[in-house]
Image (cartoon, rainbow, N blue to C red):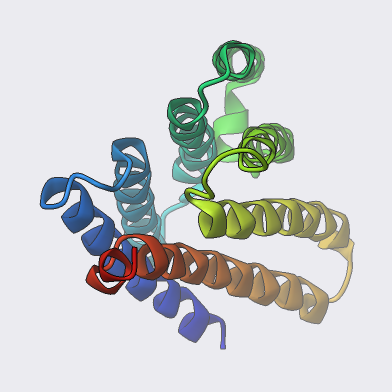
Length: 211
């Protein structure tokens, strides 16, 4: 079950990367920072999968992924907003978060080799705040990247809770642990489907014909 969800997610992620790259390079419509995010996600997922099959730990890559995801999505939402105070907040938050994580890793370098719940919570919740800015702006602006933002907020909030539960369930049964991982894999797949649906609604040829 979990393998089906994981490889289905890889497949949809690859489709999204191709679709948004086409819309950016051929149509100049998709946001370049979001294309970078999809490329980064694809490389990280491939690397984690490769390390897993080689029998090596992929937690270093996991930690890089969460920090990189925050930076790229923060840059993405910064490019969408026209409100100066929001831009300043996003930039300061990104720098502050990276500094806090750098200090944490400097004090205890073994955090690179651990499942860093502090990093996950910090980066995910900050990214949710950036997305909520975009929701607020869409009240008076066009609903650009609406479905992406909906999927992102749902995924990040739910997955953060699941990671916390997973950490608390270390001493619980393997069935509970497996259930949390399956549910998280399902959430990632749903998030990628939201991204694909955004492309279909906003960037596909059919979308342009109906505008």
